[in-house]
Length: 47
Image 1 (tube, rainbow, N blue to C red):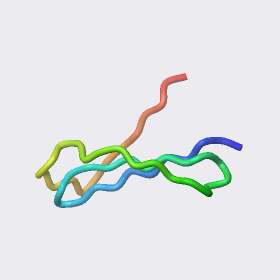
Image 2: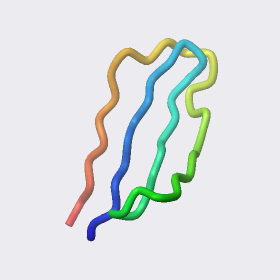
Image 3: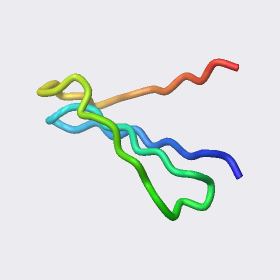
Image 4: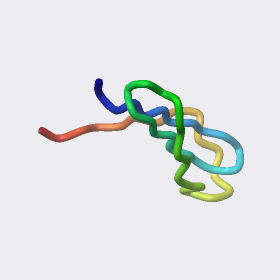
């Protein structure tokens, strides 16, 4: 199965949640851009 990434934008910054394809265990990275209001995010994966 492929890895899963979820981008979360809040008033407190951006967070990236990642899991394996089974989605049993999630890891969280962030906050990025702390204190910034982030209504949209985009993740680009280069081949």
